[in-house]
Length: 579
Ligand SMILES: [Ca+2]
Image (tube, rainbow, N blue to C red; front, side, top):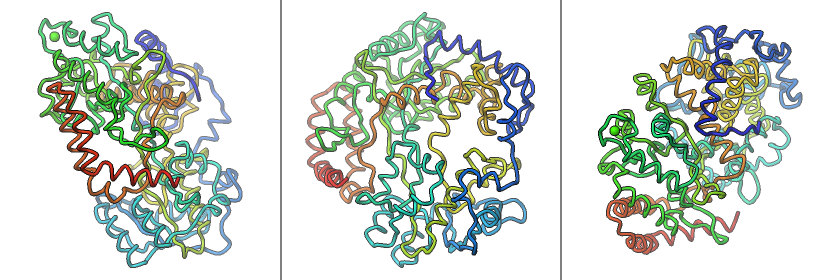
C-alpha cells in the first residue's frame, strides 16, 4: 500500500516501457466490456481462491461473515422514515422498480428486515429548502441528509440524537475505517463537545490538492528535467517561453497557464503556485495557537512578486485577466503552455488534443519546494459538507447505522457487487437509491495503487475489482496508442506516475499538506462579509501581478481587517477555542 512512485522523466519512460508488456498480456483477454471479469493469462500471477471470492454472488451469507452482529436481520421489521434528494433530474429506475421498490430496498428487507418510509422526495435545487421547512416545522424523519449549517441548527434545537454510543455498538469495521480515513476531520466536524451528532458524508480532502502538470514532450525537446524546486520551475517557465520548445521557429509559447480568477477553478489554478511559496490564499490556517486567513499572510507577497516577475518576463499570457478556464483550455490544447497547476483530473480537458497529436504529452509532479530539502505542503479544502442526522425521536438509530454498513459493504467492501449495487450493466446508477450512502474517500487512490501495480507487472488483474478493472483497461488502451474515450486521461490519473499516485505518495504519506483549519458551518459575519472580501482579494492580487505595486498588499490587509476580516477571524477563533 505504501509503495513509492518516483516521478522523473526517466523513471516514467522506463515504467511506460515495462507497462506495455503487462498491459499487452492483460488486454488480450479483456474483451471490449470494461465491466466483465478478466480471464487470467499464464503470464500473470493467479490466485484462484481470491478470484472466486471476488465474483458476484446472490448469497447474503457472505455479507454476514464480514461481521455477524451488524448484518443480522431484525426479528421484527424495522421501519425507518427518511427523505430523498433525487438529484438534478429524476432518479431513473429499471422497469418495474421505484424509489419504494428497488434492488436496495429489497436487499435491505431480505438482509436486515428493514423497510424505508419515504416521507418526501424532491430535486437537488429544492432539497435544502425542504430540509429547512422540516427543521422549522419540527417534522423530522428518522434520518436525513443536511448541510453543515443545518446540522448546527438542529443541534442547537435539540432535534438530533447523540449517536456516539450507538455508532460504537453498530459500526462494521469497514464503515469505521471509511469514516475515519481522512484522519478524523469529518468525524470531528460532525461532533459537538466531543459527542457525535451525525454521520459525516465523508469527502476526500486529498482530492482537492493541486499538482504541477508539465509538458514532457517539450522537456525532451529541450533536454530538460521535471522541476523539483521553485527555482527549477522558474527556469523551466523561462525555457518554455524563450527556447521555442515546440520547435516551430515562432515565439508563440508561455511558461505557465493562468486564468482570470487566479485560483479556485482546479484548472490553470494558481493555488499550487501559492502553496510552493508557503502561501494558502483561500483557506484558514493554524498559526501561533490560533487561526488566520491564509490570504492575508506575508508569504502571499513572495508569490505575487514572483508572478509579477514572470508576467514582466512574458512567461504568462498577457491576456490571462480576461480568460476563463475554458478559454485557457483552448490555448493549452493548441500547445501554447508548458506548465499549469491544477487538479488530478486536468488531462480530461485536453484528452482530445492528445488524440489529435499523440506526441502531446504531460506528466504531473508535486508542487515544487521553495527550499530543496523542505517539500512544499499542499493546501487541502474541507471536503465534508453534508451530514446524515438521526432524529432525537428515532426508535432505531442502530438500524440506520446498519443500513450504512450494508451500503458501504455491497458497494465497496470485500463482498462488493458493483454491477448489482453501484451501476448496472444497463447503466442504471442504483448507487443513488439508498437513504444513507457514502463512498470511501480514498477509493480513487487505492484504485490508482492497484492499477499501477498491475501495469507494472507486480500484481495480476485478479487483484482489481470491476471498477478498477475498467480504469486499468482504459489505461492499457492508451499505452497501446488508443487515446480515445478518455483512455489517456485515465492513464494520467490511475497509471504509473499518475496524478493520484503523486498526491498520495508526495503529500498524504509523508504528511505534506495543510488542512483548512475551519470546517464548521459558516459564521454569521463569514456569510455576510467573506464573499466581498474574497472579491477584493482577487482584485488586489491581480493588480499586483500586473503592475508590481507590492506595497498595495499591506494596504489590502489593512482594509481586509477593517471591512470584516478581523470580525470573522474573531468568530473563527472563538470556535477554534471550543474544539
Ligand atoms: Ca514556438
